[in-house]
Amino acid sequence: MKIALLGYGKMGKVIEQIAMQRGHEIVFRKTSADTFDRLTAADVAIDFSVPDSAVRNIEQCFETNIPIVSGTTGWLQDYDKVTLRCNEKKGAFIYSSNFSLGVNIFFELNDYLARIMSRFNQYQVKIAEIHHTQKLDAPSGTAITLAKGIIENSDYSSWALEKANADEILIESERIDNVPGTHIVSYHSAVDTIDIKHTAHNREGFALGAVIAAEWLVGKTGVFTIKDVLHLDSIQ
Image 1: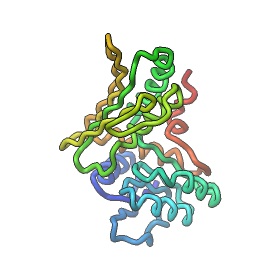
Image 2: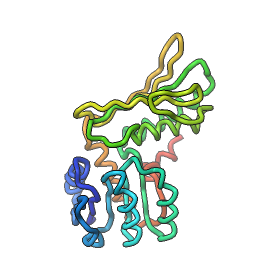
Image 3: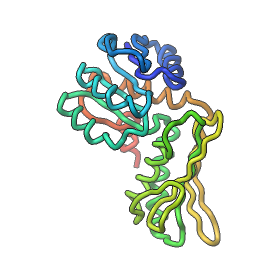
Image 4: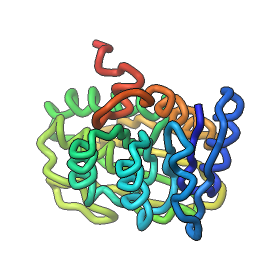
């Protein structure tokens, strides 16, 4: 499989290593100064760029009929527009705030716990996320996905950063050198606290998941999620 890397920072370089270990070829490594001239040589593109570039990268793939996997966060205000464009162009697209297998299992645990805790209003929920200092967006896309999972399975109406009302989920963001990503969901009452936590030890889990998603996406048409790739919806 021939892969275009849209964004060639730390994540792009790890994805390159994983992809080559799995027998794939990198045919295009796009930095901010590059054009898309070599994009058409690829079977699939993987985007780990920056929020300001993500939408343009994705839409360019739709224009050239290249399936696109995006792990860039911070641009989701345009998600509905992007998915509409994908369907208009009969493209193939997967977005995930986090491609790690462990994190996606964590998302499922979060949803299940939220359904249980919705019966016990003495608990107030909070999400804490810690990342490296180079991460540009806050809160993380993973934290937002966790918050959305709780909202869909409880009476919480929205989330808020650093300060929240009673019907909002508080998200606290911290940036520390050399932290790939830690997320903690806490339910606190006057008598106890229930925590679930995911800690990434390196970027390889994110990269492997993105490459597996790219392998799965080739030959398909439509808008998909990582749940489709990992068949998580089939787990009862």
